[in-house]
Length: 146
Image (cartoon, rainbow, N blue to C red):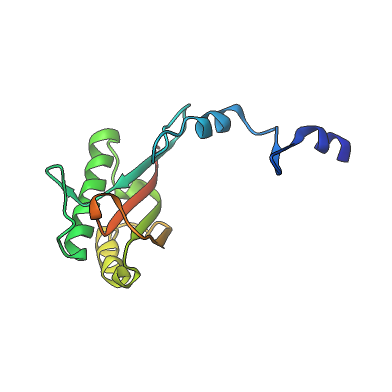
């Protein structure tokens, strides 16, 4: 059995690679371009990346964190609704990226108000050094297409 496992694994630049990974997984990793991934294959999951507090094409980097968070969530809701006919109730996982972790309490209140009618999806809050356009918040979401 150990020999079969060794046959499925290969040493590549010091990293062990499991050669039994699905072809779709490999395509998804190889299809990444720029800062964001590119969806390939078929799945019941929707990946919404890089949702910023943008209004009329301009990032609201001079606005308060509560205004930026409200606009980012508005933009997320619009993307889900317009592209996939989905709502925040379809969100399975949310990542909130903040340039100032102390803004977390303000964002918590907005998060709670937006998901007030549905079960809160799991979320991760990540501190980052900077975001595109000088924004203070960015949202990445995985939603279900059910």
